[in-house]
Image (cartoon, rainbow, N blue to C red; front, side, top):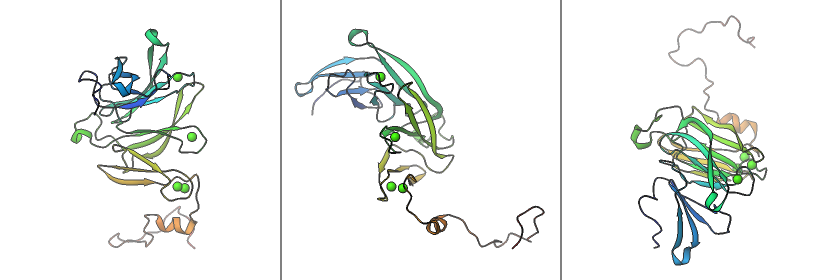
Length: 240
Ligand SMILES: [Ca+2]
Ligand SMILES: [Ca+2]
Ligand SMILES: [Ca+2]
Ligand SMILES: [Ca+2]
């Protein structure tokens, strides 16, 4: 075991990325980053460049705006907010500009950067956890959401797309992204306090319509028992 830092550097959230572009993996924490000088010989240089409070997992390093400098993406694991830090300057003049990606939901405890639509550019997967800290987090009982964001690498803009909104699935503490049904596209699995969910990617869709129809949770045996008298609809579809 190698000991890298102390309490003041540690916190809720961790990541690995080459921040300064020297080809060596650095360590990201909620309070800054450890520059890897010589990891084999325990040589690290601390840079307390930011304060994230309780970040989610992982803290991601990615060149969002494609200018050659690694930027940082992070969520608030136990409160509202998803952000990216744009890296400016370098060496002693390095600074970070904070940008909001989305502040509409809380407990962004899990993130994943992965190419889920297969266009060669990664998307950011994010969502709301349910009842972090046993319901004591801000927004614990807000509607559950899971989104992906496409990143415009010319402008650094994130565009949000829904995967599940106000459904039963929360993001939990990690996204598992694999081709779970073996049809050639990447699917998503999440687990949390509202259960385990699997999202089938329909980019490739080889399932026949009849099978889809059978998968729907739809009871077609109308009228249901105890519903009372059936009345003719005034403007319903024509009766066949
Ligand atoms: Ca950049
Ligand atoms: Ca993509
Ligand atoms: Ca698949
Ligand atoms: Ca599919």
